[in-house]
Length: 457
Image: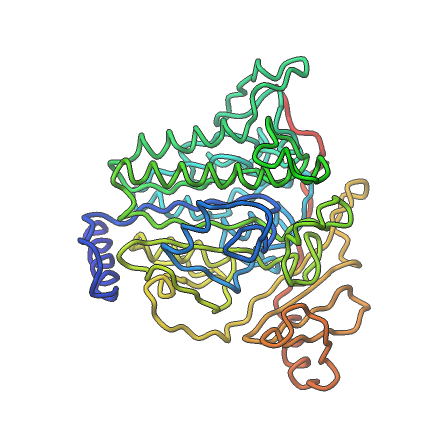
């Protein structure tokens, strides 16, 4: 009965596609979600980048839908990934800060947990960041059949570590022993991603490619193709990392073609949060966040708006652009709809599958974020420094701290958030503030000391 339900859903979805659709697949679509790390809104050529070359991504954008107003789950790593996996925004999610690394709760249901119920093979490759070894937050306790990479986000700061995790097995990288640095983990993780796709080509699969580039530290075997540019070393390395990530993505797309899976695979490409502050990294040359204000670590657009491209051949119209706002909380319900599953009732997200089918949706749904640091010494969230934001339609409300005055921006005319309209549009600001205040629930209590050191055997 469940199999029949999924088949009926897929047939209904494809009936709504363009008349030029390709032959209908015989099974629910594979889902690949590629998420790069600290890549800015403007780092791809198709989002305005002029200096860093991303040819595979730019071509991919012409094959699918380029979204202009998509948001990460948060402005830093762990809470953003928690929102993505659970479908709950940061007013409700179990992880709301980089807390080195606070694990998911055993009761947290992830998108992988749901897709396993539909018979999907599930794999995650790269940086997990939602629970270290010997915690309830590890990926194999949250729906993933396979995991390869870094469990702890601090571990992922090095591209030449002495070990990575293959599920609960610690894999020593002999090529990196004693500082040799000959095994770049971005390449290892990409190969594991490709291998998962090959091995599961005959069944529906969900591949979460949580790749680490171009997050610092900035390390790569070669600065090609930028070694001859009149740039600083860090600029050459950063650009090479973005281009290398683009090459890995292109190889993944080529593999789908080789295995004749492209027509029945929905592929998403994005970043986990906004780009880093160029003042602290020496990367101002690239204008990674484009016209947006702010960067990773705050709730202005530069901290949370991310590139998002999706391709579903024969269903999503190629070369289109959509401006409806949506966020990472929407992946979980979207995946459920694609797989023909009912959406869990406690999610904040809504399915954006209609956008992929070219259907109209109401753009006025409010989206919410809150963010605060975690004090490792006191083992508590710094709620006295809480940042909050809400977007509804063209309006964006920001409260940079609990004592700060409200800031209201009309993103349709002021995407750079330069003109505060909180006084002149006070009724709008008040209404959004009331809604925003209702979204916060107390964060979970910590469960013993959380360490900034990743676990070792």
